[in-house]
Structure formats: structure tokens, C-alpha cells
Image (cartoon, one colour):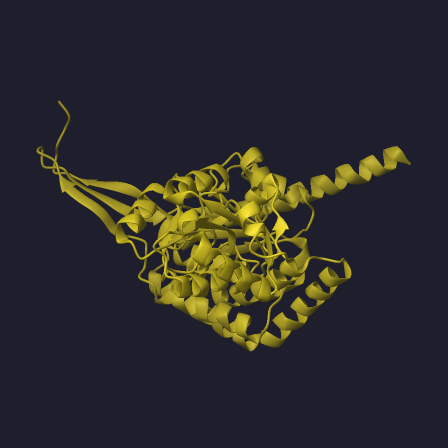
Length: 432
């Protein structure tokens, strides 16, 4: 029986390998056609896909209801359910996002730099597609539309691998994207969906599908990103966890701070821009800490704090060392009193993930120092961290927030999904 089981497992792996190799070949073939397509043609596909999403709203919501029901039956956490759930407003947001992407300027063919050499050579640096982008994501079915649309606009082929928990929703949305490609006369393989939920498929993507994939974008939990970074044999746009901090400076306006903190933590707790740690300058702890903590507790947000924070309200739970390193993605926040901006920055550098961090202050010089010295992809002054979003940046949408320092950083939108080449024009020059 053991040998039979091993044989079945081997055959299943070989079947997945064959499926993925065929998928990679089709994607690579489509990449050239897409790179040579016109901007208006790609925009036509995006508009048609948006129309299909609206027309198939009932099908998408029905598929999503089954995914959500299965997740609830498994006892999945509420924050995960929120990320998984679609409703009419979120479906409309997907369609509108595709239209906003279509309205962006064509990123391809842009002359990024132009200069002439003393020998008469004229050199232009021109934007080009990356090629084939593999996107591996969990739970959020809307990423299907965002990733597919952004890659298409930038002239890239997308190979999408959503999580098993959102398989029905992802398939329903992908069908709309394919309908858009057909309407524009573009190859259907331009936005491909991995046809299996077998985990081996991820391994094949990370290996590059025999050179078919040019870059991988992971979007999900810490374990997924860690696996991608460890196993990938192609470049990765890393989207690490959002250990987001808000620092209340000694010159912070209390009412402004309360409004921002409440929104940053509780508007949507399950997104990567949600605040996870509140740092309060000791200089204003006596006036600002209690109102902020009480506000959060009264709003049904659990607060885990240091001794100073515990002293202001009996409902505060003691924070452990692990709390400072935790992305809750839930109605939980850690809170700590720090000795000014130096200690705040030190805490962020020690525990943060270089995703998004914020200072609340009316002191412009202190704000500028924070913006300059905190080494995160997004740094804000007097604004909710929930603005850490490609749509809010005017990018139409985003594949994720890149927290690395190579190529792309911050919201990965259309421009970040391009590369470049040098076009050199001469008139008979030869090198001495």
C-alpha cells in the first residue's frame, strides 16, 4: 500500500509539472505579443474586463459565498474572513480599479532619460515590460483583478496563483479578465490562472518554469513570503508583513491624533496598512496616553501595553516581547511609552518591517526628521496609515507593497512593473 501511495504521489507531481510547464510556455509566447501590443488595445481589454465583472457580479458573489462558507466552517479567524469576503461595493471597486488603471498613461515606450555623447551617439533609456510576472497570493480574491490589470497595462503577462481558500472567487474573476482579453484580440494566456491547487505548483513557479517567469511577487502571510524568498530562483518583489507604527510626538494635537489612530487601526484591521503599534512620547503621556487608549478600548480594540500603558486603564493587557513583533491583522494593538523621537525611531528600527510608519506632530522640524530617518517604504506625517495603498497613491491599484530596496519599493503599480532598455543611435561611429 505504501508503494502504491508513493506511485500515486509521483504521478500527481508529474502531472502538475506538465501542467505548469505548458502554462509557462504559453505565457512566454504571449509575452512577446503583449509587449508589441498598443496601449489602446490593452486599455480596451481592461475596460471590457471591468464591464464583464459588473455583468457577472452575481456569479462572483455566489462563488465567493461558497468560499466564505467553507472558511467559516473551518473556524477561520474573523480578520481572514474579512479579507476573503466580497460584497457589491468591493466588486464594483474591482471594476472601477481596472478602469482607473486603463486611464493611466501608457508606461511603455516612455523615454526615461536622454543624452548625447561627445562622439555624436544619442542614447535614450526607454521603458519596457518586465516580461512574465508570477503572482502568488492568499485570501484576497480582489488581487486577481488588481494584479492581472496592472500587469496587462504594463505589457506583462501574469501567471496568477491564488490561495485555495479563494479558489472559486478567483476563478470567477479571472474569467472576466479573459473575456476582456478576447474582446481586445489579445492572447488569453496573457493573464493565466494556475489550474491546480496542488502546493507543488508554487514550487514550480519559484523555480521559474524553465525560464518562463521573470519575476515573482508574493502577497500573503509571513510564512508564504519567507518560503518565496528562500526558494525562488528568480527575482522577488518582497511584500513583507506590515508591522505599522504610529508615534505620538510631544507636539501632537490630541484630537487629530485620536482621529488618525482610530482610523489607522480600526477602519479595516485585516489590511497591511493597519496600525499595529502605538508609541507615545513620555512628554505627553500624562495628557495623551489615557484618551487614546480609552478610545481604542471603548471601540472594542484590545490593547496590550507596557507598564505605563497598563496603569491608565485596567482593561489593558500586559504586552510581551512578541507583541512588538506581531502583525495582528485584527482589533488588537500594542502600545508603549517612549522617551521622545530617538527612542521611537529606535523601536521602529528594532521591531518594524520597513512597510509603513507614521508620526503625529505639529512640529514641522520633528516631522521632517522622522520622514527622513525612518527607513520604511512609506512614511507619513499626520495621516492615517491606511493610505498605504496603490489606489490612494493614484496608481489605480497595486500588486503589493514592496518593502525591499531593489527596483520597486512601496506600492507596486504600473510603473514599478516595467524595466528599461537603452536605444543608441549613431551615424557610422566606431570605437577607437
